[in-house]
Length: 176
Figure 1 (tube, rainbow, N blue to C red):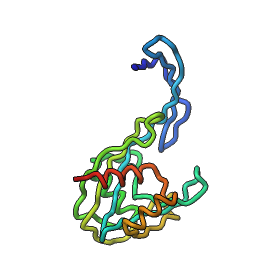
Figure 2 (cartoon, rainbow, N blue to C red):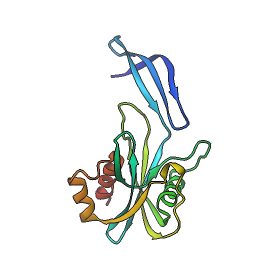
Figure 3 (cartoon, rainbow, N blue to C red):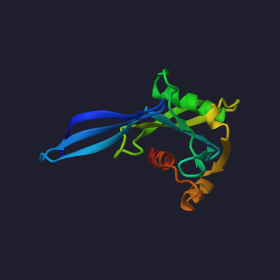
Figure 4 (tube, one colour):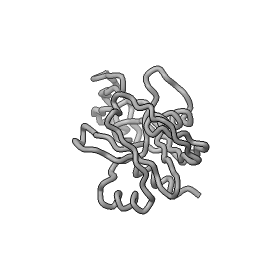
């Protein structure tokens, strides 16, 4: 089914995202509205070492709780680069690790019913430690290594629920 945009208006905007409301027309001629969140693409990084992963944990305000996740994020406003450069930058920023090797695992769309935002997923190996370079919004972040068995236990127990983290792990498991 194709949808045609009849009109669009910006509802809200901040440095991280914008919200627009589109008036649409469906293929059968019926009309409606569609709310769309526009946000920059991001990278998810799986720092893999000794058959386990380095995860980060931080407080997620909308959920009202802390969340274990793979390092992920986007370029700051005004900064551009390749997905590989973004993955390398996020890895250093959140964990301090530098990857000797980055392998692209795939692409994910975390909420394709409301945003076109995509996330490129990378496996980071041959890790070397260094200082993290966290942003002020990441000041409560901590990092810890978990073996794959423990990671999977945490997923089954509902301790890891972050959508991009779960999708990235699926891409990891499916790689040749």
